[in-house]
Length: 325
Image 1 (cartoon, helix red, strand yellow):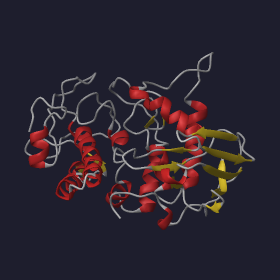
Image 2 (cartoon, rainbow, N blue to C red; image 1 turned 90 degrees about the vertical axis):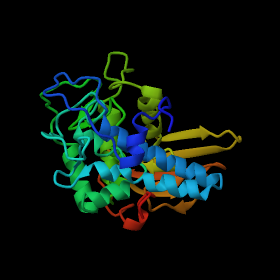
Image 3 (cartoon, rainbow, N blue to C red; image 1 turned 45 degrees about the vertical axis):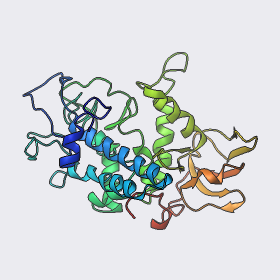
């Protein structure tokens, strides 16, 4: 364990499977010296999943198993009594009081509240769905997330660009608009992605504004990929999760000289819903595809319409891959 390495509190994480938080009474605005234990535990879990895949490619099976076991550590900060990820004291007890509507800068969460941090499990959306009670309850929780007004009592820097509790202006929950694809309701992903593209970008007089920060290009890359019609919810894996394309036609020039073309037929401001799709000439009935599907060029064609097709991509077997089966 390297105390000077990039992972702070690593010893506690390895020993306990989670990181505790320092509690300071009534920090408003929230202080910057906390452990962000919930968010850090969840981020380390995702890191471990990525390392498991890397170890597997290197043929290091024992390392793969070790990292894969640790990739489940996000479950150690899930409190079933509240239905949210929640901070722990050093002795493991839950921190009180707890309000998932209140944002924090570095206490339990990281520049976010409990609602926004809940979804920080891009490597195991199915596992999170299981914690929340299955597909229907998972999607109902997402419905709440995108509809409950954001009116916090405290202040957290960088929580900007809001739709309900959803924050497009910071990174912890930017993948969650695509989570309906995992829950069997991809038409809701199509609707909310178009809303984010329309309302939260280009609001200034020059049409260039972002809804918040652009750490490592995350907020701009979200726009670019989502405009094409898909997003890398879990960049540790080579899959693209489908939203709703902004352009009638777009071409990606690949490094091997081939082109991958995305066509959205009958696309418009009102025709935001996918009615059907084909990928390289074959019907596509799932809301995702792999990088290998585009690596040698090809064509993705969407038929768009004004009303949701609730039968497209809704099967449990059509859901994108997760760590949990």
